[in-house]
Length: 217
Image (cartoon, rainbow, N blue to C red):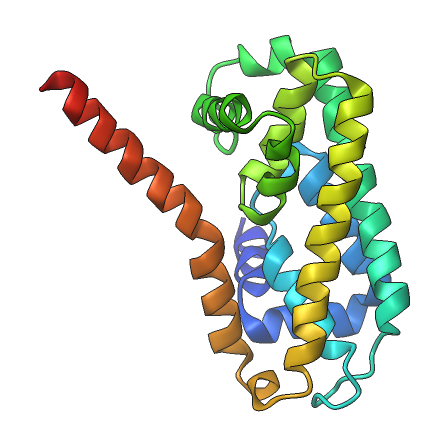
């Protein structure tokens, strides 16, 4: 248990992310992005922070940078992100009814599916793209789309657009930051990324609470 807690803390700290990327290289990055987007148990993984940090470390101007070729990095991680959603969609289609109807586990709760399903119903196919930029939702929305029998041709289009936009956007931002003084302030960068990424969740929660109060009134 202590090892798992230490690993979790490492994933969500600037020094831990840098050490992990430097030690594991491209293989670790591909694995984490694939697991976060492809398996429900990967929802806790820090995809946004990881992509930003990888982008910074691919910049030759950053301290410890030049670790990756940015084009190779973007291509490999885009393929991992798209493949992950493909797997998640397939699992949702095949096992969705069984998984969603199970009692709450220690990690995976019914509220995760409910929130993802509500988001999918509101946004339609664009939910696949938009969820890429929202923690937890990017893991559960593809699964829910598979369970909801979203047409595959429609899904694959939004999956490719979303995966490419997410990876290119965040790695590109990181690469640009690697040319600035922000590259030495990774703690602040990650904090900003986390705040921006969870903002839609907070706004959605506050909106739902306000609507409940209005209904009761």
